[in-house]
Image 1: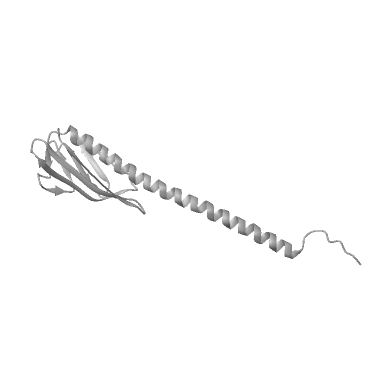
Image 2: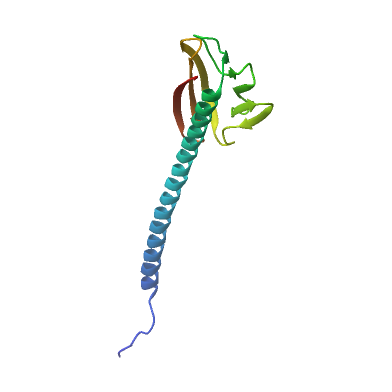
Amino acid sequence: MSYKNKGTTIIEMIIYSALLVTIMVALYSFYSQITIQRVNQLARAEIYTNGQRILFDFHQTVKKANSVNYPTIGESDDYLFLNAGATTYQLDDDNALEKTEDGQTFKLTDSLVQVKNLTFTHFGPSANHPTVKISFDLTGRTYSYHFQSATTLP
């Protein structure tokens, strides 16, 4: 007797299911790795953007300043007073960098980025044209970058 089987056997179903599961797991792994890399790239870009924003604002503000009141020449501290205290830079309670100018306070960093090891250094070459150096670390969830720069008053 000869039987012509129509349809699939249980063994074929198991093989097809195993192949389908393997392909789906491979695709999921591939897309999850791409997503993780994209999130990490965005986190690094956010930290870098915050650092550049701080440095740009710092340079513009110091170049417009008439005097550096604190820290004194040769000293370093974590806050800066310019123009008899009319402009200040300091950290708030959430480790965000704040700038106060003409009575208005602005945050220079986003809420997801923390400023650590902030240091302003006031040094020569002269009292008429002092140089102010800023140095700080920006930390996100998994990344931390160091920034520093210096500007001389006109």
